[in-house]
Length: 448
Image 1 (cartoon, helix red, strand yellow):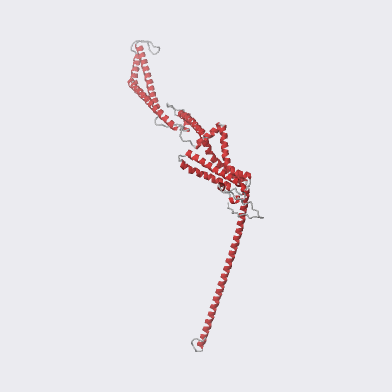
Image 2 (cartoon, one colour):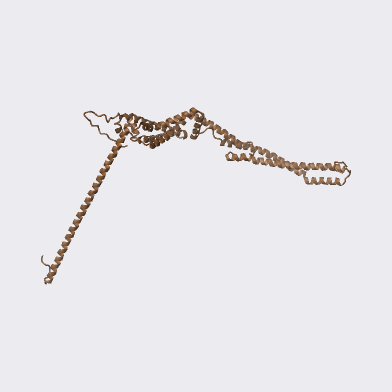
């Protein structure tokens, strides 16, 4: 806004005028200058001094709150010292103060439209939220930190349960559906120990030993049957339909003995018993190795699960604090009301200058600023007219000088041409006289 210099008022009828009224020098003048108030104009409306001083204080307070808010944020979420955080906070407070100052200074002398007013209100609300949120987090910090600790404990317990279910100790194979679900959620852990392979080795060896043992038992049972039938057949003992009951070494007796001999040759009982003993030893060793692998697996899984679990301590991020504050609001109606009342109070504080100017309407100072702006515009128009007149006059004078120059040049050229023609005529006359003299037989120059 252009500063207006007021001339001393002229006395009318011998009475001193009331205006301008020059106020006392002091911090009020400096405060009002922060929001763009022209004291030379305000001196014509001294009753508005308190109003604009209060507006300036509100703007300064908003800047101070913004600086405190940024100081809280910087100290909370960075490791810098107070000496480093303070300039950052002061710069942010200066930014908020500058924006608020512009919001007030740009409204002097004008009655903004509804759209402009709403735009300024929206901007003030946004700035109010930016300033309010860090202060709210600082005010509720003890309760927020308790809530964050509880949330971390619950999250840790929930994840521990899920990891334990997806990575059972001792190891056991999960059903396909459960394994797919754990893999989709990223809960399957990978460790160096391989209990699955160890279990597969034990199962394989036990299966082989069991199969071989059953085969040996089956052949032994068949051998005992043949020996029993052989004794009965050769001794004449009747055993159902399996023996004839005739004493002596008959064909049936010889056949049973042949079958027994063939079974002993093909069964290879000593070799198979050695194989069974070897399998049983290997199975026992595999079971012991499986125990070692399972112990290592249990240790590694416990370590891996502990690394995967969220830490109950450590730095608390702003998102965690915000979530904790939301949780507290959901749990306590008092916290919800207090948070929103404080938030609304801080936002209203930032919107207050704009609201007061809008609700109170144009002040005397605003009308005077508008009048001065109109006078400045009229002065500017007069200046433009004067400049245009001077421009036209300068162009006319330049055109006149150009015409004078052209006329002088033309006269000079005509004078030069006339002199040249006179010289030419004299030369022609001289040549004629010379020629006439030669014709008369008197060469030489003719006297003038």
